[in-house]
Image (cartoon, rainbow, N blue to C red; front, side, top):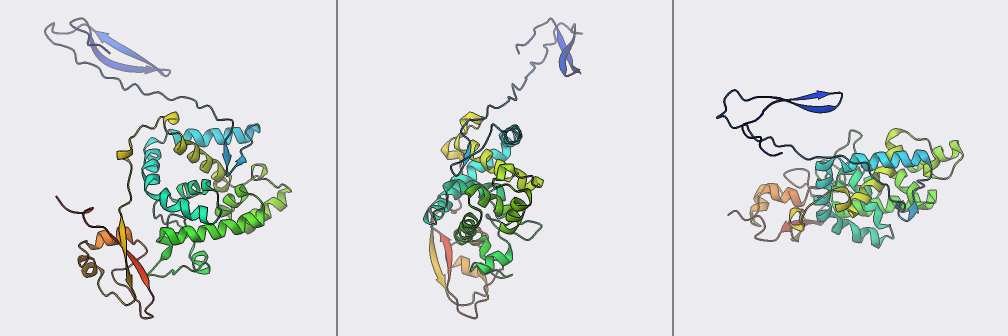
Length: 309
């Protein structure tokens, strides 16, 4: 808005029934220059749902009014939660290159990387139920699939190993339930839970099920995040590659004995304990209990990336 010179002083902004009206009066002193009023040109728009929304190649049936409304809701919520959305773009740049080849190796559709996004926001999250890590794996599930899970070492926080376990679980779900969409929903509700609900309601498709809020939103949230992350400009996200988070190159050090002090261990490689834990979050304590002399591969960042100016 242009400055109003020597004519009117804007003294208030009044809201009446949702309409904003400027209250104005003559200036008390003709020599006083009114302040320029800055208005943030921020608009909220309804979104047009793409006709071809799908998960792992399985179409979202938008012709169903209930499905349409639920899909519309999740796309709106995630589009206009801008700070969270931008963080997803930033983290995806860092972690998707690690997750994608593991999914591909196991024959899991690439869309399942978005399941990790809604599970944890691509962070090492901790759930009230006891799930941990990017893939939110429960303790028993981790142990049953070969992960070490205890107070000293918790490989649910090891992204590569946790992704391997998630793939095994998803393949079992797909073989049991028959579709990738149901397999994804079972990641939230469990294979037994999904099978029981399908039988009780005498249907065979996720979109025909009446479910609790969390599982009922689950696939819609995944598809919404997929659509937004694949089409940032369409949904108003503006950034450059330099704005996104990057992976720091590392090399591995094999350890097959106890480590009594990781702070001292870190200094041997020119880093500190904090940096060691950033790259090895599965090391849960400041020491390693390894009386069995198991081989652990510890990631050490290449020199120069954490150098102080």
